[in-house]
Length: 432
Ligand SMILES: Cc1cc2nc3c(=O)[nH]c(=O)nc-3n(C[C@H](O)[C@H](O)[C@H](O)COP(=O)(O)OP(=O)(O)OC[C@H]3O[C@@H](n4cnc5c(N)ncnc54)[C@H](O)[C@@H]3O)c2cc1C
Image 1 (cartoon, rainbow, N blue to C red):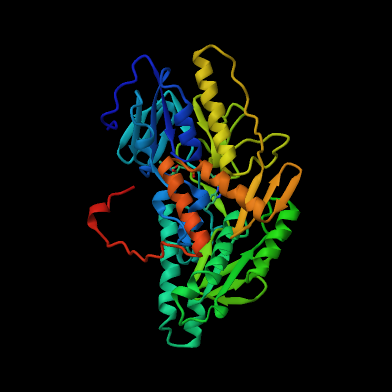
Image 2: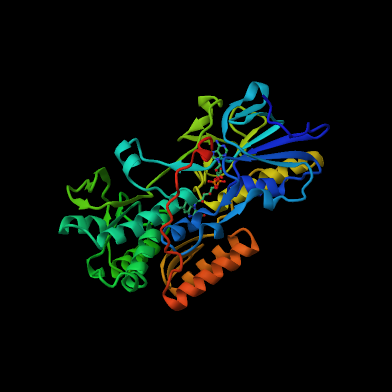
């Protein structure tokens, strides 16, 4: 059965975009609706700004400040359609995408499905740790954090108290560093005010990373700065160590140590979300192999962008980093090429321009690698704030984030420490 209420595209070609994240959304904005009918599908009806998930998880921001309804973004656009559904299979021979609400035909298909958490085959970690790949997972972490503190107040013995008062972040990339830094800020700032009965000198924050240095994708200078700042803020670092398993409440480390904790946050790896139907030969390193025109290997009208795509060049023998800038620039290139096709202009290959990397470690502390310049401290932090404010979608969201950040900064307070538990409802059991 066809997805209903999407009119035939007529003389225009139809572009179907799977995924309304950084790449899919940019593509949807930049492709000309004068030349193409565009259908954007996503399993959520909103866009999520992933770089600030950790702030939702640590009660610094509301989920609605970093999410934006897809429909609102494209109001009043002709020949543009949004459907909340999950792509289940691609049938290239019939130029068709099957979803949980019906199928859809395409002339051009853009796969921008992003990544999921990678547990490297360790099921015990998948089942018992908390991930940070969606707004809802951010809320689960926030709830776990707040619940642990509430339960610590009535812990029956020292062991139980230790488990509840210990927080383990696994993964020393930007997300792990930011999460550990935010926990350290909470320990020093707001939590002792909220829980005067608890002795916060006993609260433990561990950061475990298999790589020999934190933020391995950034410069050595930035890694060193991050290490120094986190250590100074009371985070215990376990570097060059991997987690072998989690047998609740014991996190087992490769150096033989065990950490007792009920709060284990897994931010150590990502794996692309793949949709069946594409030939196996089109995959490498679990990502879709694309050429410089962003076409999936072996397919003429299927493209892949962002985290899901792998473009191997002399400069990028392992592919581009899975970051927002790559996703945005790929989408801009593809939209321009498809628009140019209709104007009989030449197609240009994708050429990534690295604008630099930033990561924050918490209040007044961040690191920046901008070309040859590597710096840290308050200037890097202010730059980080500015870049993130400017990248958030929607004026209301920008203002709301700015107000929350200003409030938190001047009052040493996070206003969102609410433990809201969803009530189970049969009404939503069919959601994708
Ligand atoms: C916690 C976290 C922090 C990060 N911090 C930074 C940072 O500070 N700076 C930076 O540059 N990058 C950061 N990243 C990486 C950055 O967010 C990604 O590189 C970027 O989101 C990739 O864009 P994308 O469009 O490929 O995928 P995404 O933005 O992940 O979008 C994929 C979309 O596809 C949808 N989707 C997936 N499968 C289906 C399906 N089968 N059917 C329908 N819809 C589907 C999803 O719902 C989602 O909306 C961070 C990532 C995370 C998780």
